[in-house]
Amino acid sequence: MAYFWSNLKNGLRNLPFIFIHYMQKKLPADKIIFMTEDTDNPKYEHVYVLVDCNNFFASCERLVNPEYRNVPIVVLSNNDGCIVARSNEAKALGIKMGIPYFQVQDLIKKNHVKVFSSNFDLYLDISSRVMRALASISPNVIPYSVDEAFIKFDSLTEEQALDFGFQVKRFIKSNIGISVGVGIAQSKTLAKIASHHAKKHADTAGVYSLLNLFNRDKILRNTPISDVWGVGRRMNAHLTENRITTAYELAQCDPEIMRRHYSIVLARTIMELNAQDAISDDNSRENQQQIMYSRTFKDKLSDIKDIEEAVANYAAQTAQQLRSHQLYCSTVSVFLRTPSHGSLPKYENSICLKLSIPTIDTRDIIKAASEGLHQIFKKGYHYMSAGVCLGGLTANKIAQSDLFSYTPDDETIERGEKLMEAMDNLNTIHPQSISVSAQGHFARDKKFTDPKHRSQFYTIYVNGSPIAY
Image (tube, rainbow, N blue to C red; front, top):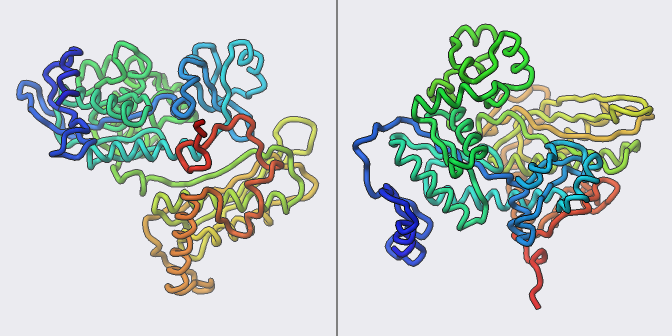
């Protein structure tokens, strides 16, 4: 109980929850439990607590490189092309998200900004640790992306929700080492807005609630329509033309009228802004529509053999992600493009192939991707990037097959799935140790990718660990 009493001494009063310290033997270590219930405050139904990691990629780099804790950090995209993550110190220098690296190299050098190449294996490992930590304190965790997840409660007062938010924030920081922002509301869309406000305003201490109607209206009036979850660039332009510029103005619209004029997605967004739980809680599985993996080549490629090897590896990456989500795909799309600028001839194309039955097998996905590539490839061009996208995602492999297409028998499918499971298990222990023959030596060939600032894989496997003398 020492941890609890130390928190009381720091000014935390009337906590409805309590941490169970590691030394407590009656309950598992990483548990937060309800201890009291405040009957003076109203209870809200369907309360969502959004836990959103701050500057996630940059935070992961600091976690394994603590010497840069107070140094500005940027993380670069594939092949060190653009900036995809920034620490708060880097943001304060005016470094914009998505800006090409070469455009800010002088600014980075002048201000001694530490540069890292993307290390997605590291980020996914830290992400899985965060999600496991959240699952240890609540059975109702709904992962949304690599750096954020919702925790759902059926009934909670605002005071209980806020105290829980602060507990979770400290719990993730002390156990994982990652700082998070917490947004609380009765819908996922409002929780996203609350989280955004918590991150932007220091007086919130990283936790903010929109359960209260007064707070909700005040924040919505100051939230641009472009910052609302589910409102894309084109929709933002349409709404702005109709003088709907804030989240509050959108919330005043009739959902049914907006559904007829725009889409069911916008109608649900309006309902969510009015604290109605309108988005499915299916753990993002059935809601996920696509899995895509694309990259820019280090050097422009014109030989289809080189591009086919790259596409095979992108297909393998999407297949692995597909299996990690326990989903099956029924379509495979491939795209290919040349640079959009410069004097070289321009060309881009894409194709979508439908599979005979839903699959999780890397071999099937690579085969379809290769067939698609050969259909859209044209000689005489210097290609800059390619990508593979899996669609028609389902949680099972049941589908009506084509009468005239080859359909493997159940035994063959089961053997293939067991093979994929074994391959994933081995690659988890020894990354990139097992691959399909079509992938060639892509991962080790610097003509495809050449990250110059990648950190070590400290948290993933023994060979990446630092050596102590």
